[in-house]
Image 1: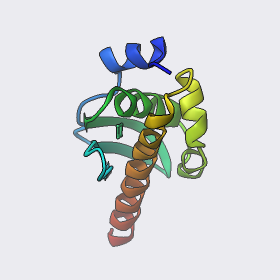
Image 2 (image 1 turned 90 degrees about the vertical axis):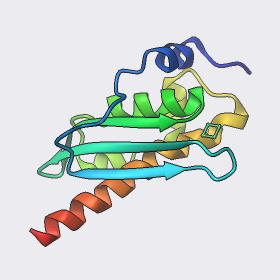
Image 3 (image 1 turned 135 degrees about the vertical axis):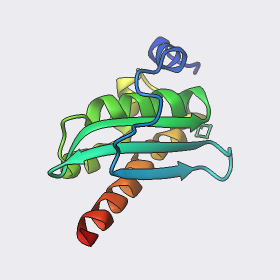
Length: 125
Ligand code: FES
C-alpha cells in the first residue's frame, strides 16, 4: 500500500506545525527503531485543548497523523482527547501502510506527556 492522497496532502502542507508561544503543556515522543520524533505544544484552558502545534523530525505518516490528531483534539476536553483511538486517526487519512501503523502512536504519546506537564504545573500553582 502506498500513501493516500490525504497523507501526502498533509505531509506537504501541514496546518499545525510550529511552536505555540503560550503553551502550558509540552510533550515529546519518539520511536527508537526509526528515530522519528515529534514535539507537541498544547494550550489548555479549564482542562480543554484550545490550541496545539507540533515540530517534527519524521516520516510522512508521522507528520500527517500528528497534523490530523491536532485538528481533532482542538476544542475537546483532556478526557475526550485521551480516548481517541489511533486507528481512527489512520482511517481519517484513508489508511496507512502496515509498516507505518507504529507512527500513529507518536502524537498521542506526546499529547499524554503534555497533559502530564500541564497537570504538574497546575498542581504547583
Ligand atoms: S516511520 Fe517511524 S514514526 Fe513514521
